[in-house]
Length: 280
Image 1: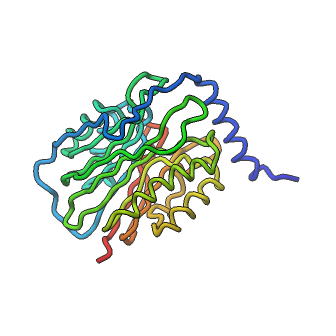
Image 2: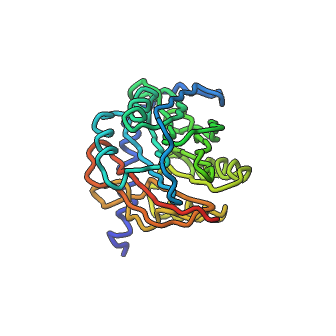
């Protein structure tokens, strides 16, 4: 007899897929130019003091909504203070600029598409109190089987005393064939192989089931990364318990601590953070 504990991930997957299908099948308008659209802003006044640690966080702010409330969370949560980099997903340029200005950070933002649900830009941003250099948009292979949406990663070098390459991504949902989703990830890892120095890779990887999580982590570890937030039980609350959709992976770093900021009704995701030490 199959136990309920085994069925729970399957039931959750079916519920999510059903909801996605009911949300509509409008075709997405994608931004396929690797050079843009591109948005940047400089709101940092002076670089922070370097204490030998690198603090990073990632947060999927659902559809880039509730920006004033998100700013309050980012300003008032003790674990989200003194960040060296903040990765945001599902953003538009206006929301990104508002957060960057409120936090006194520089930013680079690339949209992947105009989302068919709300008809606004939908993409990823990197924010930092340090200068951001050599930013780039990576177009990931394969389109959403639901609405033809493209996925991207945004990369930039954070100019700390030891410069850090940072990747922010939002992979396709479980509607896509698992092999194709790993090929999206592999595009990012192949680009990371061309970089020297420490690397932080984070974002929303949409691993709905434990099997998807295990495949993702194994693939990233094979490329020489450590799972910096492995101690975190989950990043998305659901009726079936916590799910891990969001990750921070690192290469050239030693993880020190990690966690999530819970009880944040701003989004369906919790902010995920990690403290790292650069390997000299």
